[in-house]
Image (cartoon, rainbow, N blue to C red; front, side, top):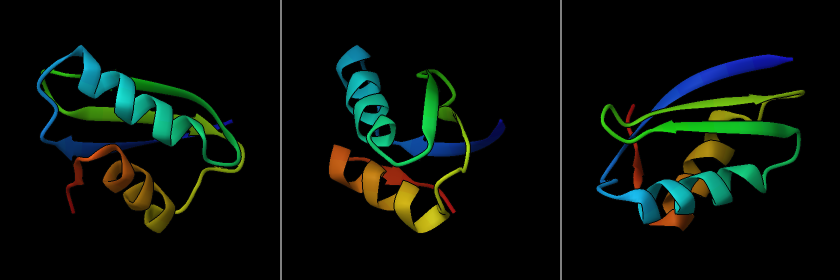
Length: 68
C-alpha cells in the first residue's frame, strides 16, 4: 500500500478534520486518511492512490484548500 502527504489550509477544529477525512475517504482506492490539525498535514494511504486533481477536488468539496 502506498501513501502520500498533502497540506490542507483552513482547518481549525475537529469538524474540519472530519469533513476532510470524509471527503478524501470517499475516493476510490483510499483505505486510510490521517489528519494532523496543527500542521494541516494529511496522510492518505491506499492502492491505488488517487491523483492530485482528485485529492484537490475532495478537499475543495470539504470547503478547504490543498496547498501546492
